[in-house]
Figure (cartoon, helix red, strand yellow):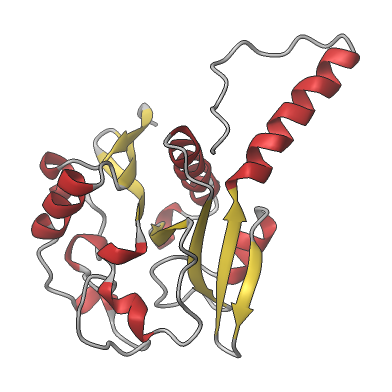
Length: 205
Protein backbone atom coordinates (compact mmCIF):
# COMPACT_ATOMS: atom_id res chain seq x y z
CA UNK A 1 0.00 0.00 0.00
CA UNK A 2 1.38 3.39 -1.03
CA UNK A 3 1.48 6.61 0.90
CA UNK A 4 -1.95 8.22 1.22
CA UNK A 5 -2.46 11.98 0.99
CA UNK A 6 -5.32 14.49 0.82
CA UNK A 7 -4.72 17.28 -1.67
CA UNK A 8 -6.65 20.28 -3.04
CA UNK A 9 -7.94 19.91 -6.58
CA UNK A 10 -6.07 22.22 -8.94
CA UNK A 11 -6.38 22.60 -12.69
CA UNK A 12 -3.32 20.39 -13.06
CA UNK A 13 -4.94 17.66 -10.94
CA UNK A 14 -8.27 17.56 -12.83
CA UNK A 15 -7.18 14.56 -14.95
CA UNK A 16 -6.74 12.60 -11.71
CA UNK A 17 -10.43 12.86 -10.73
CA UNK A 18 -12.00 9.40 -10.45
CA UNK A 19 -14.53 8.32 -13.06
CA UNK A 20 -17.23 9.50 -13.52
CA UNK A 21 -16.45 12.72 -11.61
CA UNK A 22 -14.09 14.06 -14.24
CA UNK A 23 -16.88 14.27 -16.83
CA UNK A 24 -19.91 14.84 -14.59
CA UNK A 25 -21.45 18.29 -14.79
CA UNK A 26 -24.78 17.52 -13.12
CA UNK A 27 -24.81 20.40 -10.63
CA UNK A 28 -23.12 22.80 -13.04
CA UNK A 29 -25.78 22.20 -15.71
CA UNK A 30 -28.10 25.19 -16.31
CA UNK A 31 -30.88 23.02 -17.77
CA UNK A 32 -33.10 20.85 -15.54
CA UNK A 33 -31.66 17.33 -15.27
CA UNK A 34 -33.39 14.09 -14.34
CA UNK A 35 -32.56 12.47 -11.01
CA UNK A 36 -32.17 9.22 -12.96
CA UNK A 37 -29.29 10.63 -15.00
CA UNK A 38 -26.43 8.23 -15.67
CA UNK A 39 -23.55 10.25 -14.22
CA UNK A 40 -21.00 7.98 -15.87
CA UNK A 41 -22.32 8.98 -19.29
CA UNK A 42 -21.53 12.66 -18.91
CA UNK A 43 -19.15 14.50 -21.19
CA UNK A 44 -18.68 17.77 -19.30
CA UNK A 45 -15.34 19.56 -19.30
CA UNK A 46 -14.91 20.64 -15.68
CA UNK A 47 -11.95 22.90 -16.43
CA UNK A 48 -14.04 26.02 -17.12
CA UNK A 49 -16.07 25.52 -13.94
CA UNK A 50 -12.95 25.00 -11.82
CA UNK A 51 -11.24 28.02 -13.33
CA UNK A 52 -14.25 30.17 -12.45
CA UNK A 53 -14.60 28.92 -8.87
CA UNK A 54 -10.89 28.96 -8.10
CA UNK A 55 -10.68 32.53 -9.37
CA UNK A 56 -13.74 33.95 -7.63
CA UNK A 57 -13.99 31.84 -4.45
CA UNK A 58 -10.95 29.65 -3.96
CA UNK A 59 -10.22 25.98 -3.31
CA UNK A 60 -13.33 23.90 -4.00
CA UNK A 61 -12.27 20.25 -4.20
CA UNK A 62 -10.30 17.60 -2.35
CA UNK A 63 -8.77 14.32 -3.54
CA UNK A 64 -7.60 11.35 -1.53
CA UNK A 65 -4.58 9.96 -3.38
CA UNK A 66 -2.56 6.81 -2.94
CA UNK A 67 0.43 6.37 -5.22
CA UNK A 68 -1.12 9.05 -7.50
CA UNK A 69 -4.36 7.05 -7.79
CA UNK A 70 -7.55 8.84 -6.74
CA UNK A 71 -9.39 6.91 -4.01
CA UNK A 72 -12.09 9.50 -3.29
CA UNK A 73 -13.24 12.99 -4.29
CA UNK A 74 -15.19 15.86 -2.72
CA UNK A 75 -16.43 19.05 -4.40
CA UNK A 76 -17.97 22.07 -2.65
CA UNK A 77 -18.61 25.80 -3.16
CA UNK A 78 -21.26 28.47 -2.55
CA UNK A 79 -24.66 27.60 -4.02
CA UNK A 80 -24.43 30.27 -6.73
CA UNK A 81 -21.86 28.13 -8.55
CA UNK A 82 -24.37 25.27 -9.00
CA UNK A 83 -27.24 26.32 -11.32
CA UNK A 84 -28.97 22.93 -11.00
CA UNK A 85 -29.91 23.74 -7.39
CA UNK A 86 -32.69 26.06 -8.57
CA UNK A 87 -34.69 23.06 -9.80
CA UNK A 88 -34.74 21.24 -6.46
CA UNK A 89 -38.06 21.46 -4.63
CA UNK A 90 -36.33 20.82 -1.28
CA UNK A 91 -34.09 23.83 -1.78
CA UNK A 92 -32.77 26.36 -1.59
CA UNK A 93 -29.56 25.82 0.31
CA UNK A 94 -29.37 28.15 3.33
CA UNK A 95 -27.68 31.52 2.66
CA UNK A 96 -25.05 30.87 5.35
CA UNK A 97 -24.10 27.41 4.07
CA UNK A 98 -21.60 26.07 1.56
CA UNK A 99 -22.97 23.36 -0.72
CA UNK A 100 -21.25 19.96 -0.83
CA UNK A 101 -22.08 18.83 -4.37
CA UNK A 102 -20.03 15.65 -4.57
CA UNK A 103 -18.69 13.10 -2.12
CA UNK A 104 -17.66 10.12 -4.21
CA UNK A 105 -15.81 6.93 -3.36
CA UNK A 106 -15.55 4.30 -6.14
CA UNK A 107 -17.08 0.94 -5.24
CA UNK A 108 -13.75 -0.85 -4.97
CA UNK A 109 -12.47 1.61 -2.36
CA UNK A 110 -15.52 1.74 -0.11
CA UNK A 111 -15.46 0.45 3.44
CA UNK A 112 -12.13 2.13 4.26
CA UNK A 113 -13.50 5.23 5.96
CA UNK A 114 -12.61 7.47 3.02
CA UNK A 115 -16.00 9.20 2.96
CA UNK A 116 -15.71 10.20 6.60
CA UNK A 117 -12.12 11.32 6.03
CA UNK A 118 -13.18 13.60 3.17
CA UNK A 119 -16.15 15.07 5.06
CA UNK A 120 -13.89 15.91 8.00
CA UNK A 121 -11.37 17.51 5.63
CA UNK A 122 -14.06 19.69 4.05
CA UNK A 123 -15.36 20.68 7.50
CA UNK A 124 -11.91 21.78 8.67
CA UNK A 125 -11.31 23.79 5.51
CA UNK A 126 -14.62 25.63 5.82
CA UNK A 127 -14.13 26.32 9.53
CA UNK A 128 -10.73 27.85 8.84
CA UNK A 129 -12.32 30.03 6.16
CA UNK A 130 -14.97 31.30 8.58
CA UNK A 131 -18.11 29.58 7.27
CA UNK A 132 -21.02 28.69 9.53
CA UNK A 133 -22.45 25.57 7.90
CA UNK A 134 -22.31 23.05 5.06
CA UNK A 135 -25.33 21.46 3.38
CA UNK A 136 -25.94 18.74 0.81
CA UNK A 137 -28.68 16.73 -0.88
CA UNK A 138 -28.70 12.98 -0.39
CA UNK A 139 -30.96 10.05 -1.14
CA UNK A 140 -31.87 7.00 0.93
CA UNK A 141 -30.14 4.73 -1.58
CA UNK A 142 -26.54 5.41 -2.67
CA UNK A 143 -26.99 4.43 -6.34
CA UNK A 144 -26.55 7.26 -8.89
CA UNK A 145 -26.20 9.96 -6.28
CA UNK A 146 -23.23 12.33 -6.56
CA UNK A 147 -23.09 13.42 -2.92
CA UNK A 148 -23.61 10.21 -0.98
CA UNK A 149 -26.68 9.00 0.90
CA UNK A 150 -28.73 10.20 3.85
CA UNK A 151 -27.76 7.53 6.36
CA UNK A 152 -24.06 8.31 5.96
CA UNK A 153 -24.54 11.97 6.86
CA UNK A 154 -26.84 11.21 9.80
CA UNK A 155 -24.19 8.88 11.20
CA UNK A 156 -21.65 11.72 10.98
CA UNK A 157 -23.62 14.35 12.88
CA UNK A 158 -25.61 16.02 10.07
CA UNK A 159 -29.30 16.86 10.47
CA UNK A 160 -32.18 16.69 8.02
CA UNK A 161 -33.65 20.13 7.23
CA UNK A 162 -36.25 19.03 4.69
CA UNK A 163 -37.04 15.69 3.09
CA UNK A 164 -39.29 13.96 0.60
CA UNK A 165 -39.89 10.29 -0.05
CA UNK A 166 -36.73 10.14 -2.19
CA UNK A 167 -34.34 12.82 -1.01
CA UNK A 168 -33.13 14.85 1.98
CA UNK A 169 -31.51 18.25 2.41
CA UNK A 170 -28.99 17.86 5.23
CA UNK A 171 -26.98 20.39 7.22
CA UNK A 172 -23.98 20.38 9.51
CA UNK A 173 -23.59 23.42 11.77
CA UNK A 174 -19.85 24.07 11.85
CA UNK A 175 -20.17 26.13 15.05
CA UNK A 176 -21.30 22.94 16.78
CA UNK A 177 -18.19 21.16 15.52
CA UNK A 178 -15.98 23.91 16.99
CA UNK A 179 -17.89 23.89 20.29
CA UNK A 180 -17.49 20.11 20.52
CA UNK A 181 -13.72 20.42 20.11
CA UNK A 182 -13.52 23.17 22.75
CA UNK A 183 -15.61 21.13 25.21
CA UNK A 184 -13.50 18.02 24.61
CA UNK A 185 -10.32 19.98 25.31
CA UNK A 186 -11.83 21.26 28.58
CA UNK A 187 -12.83 17.77 29.70
CA UNK A 188 -9.38 16.36 28.95
CA UNK A 189 -7.73 19.19 30.84
CA UNK A 190 -9.97 18.62 33.88
CA UNK A 191 -8.95 14.96 33.88
CA UNK A 192 -5.28 15.92 33.61
CA UNK A 193 -5.05 14.18 30.24
CA UNK A 194 -2.58 15.87 27.89
CA UNK A 195 -4.34 17.60 24.99
CA UNK A 196 -2.50 17.06 21.66
CA UNK A 197 -0.82 20.28 20.60
CA UNK A 198 -2.36 21.53 17.39
CA UNK A 199 -3.41 24.77 15.85
CA UNK A 200 -6.79 25.89 17.15
CA UNK A 201 -9.46 26.31 14.50
CA UNK A 202 -10.93 29.83 14.44
CA UNK A 203 -14.53 30.13 15.53
CA UNK A 204 -16.64 31.41 12.62
CA UNK A 205 -18.21 34.81 13.14
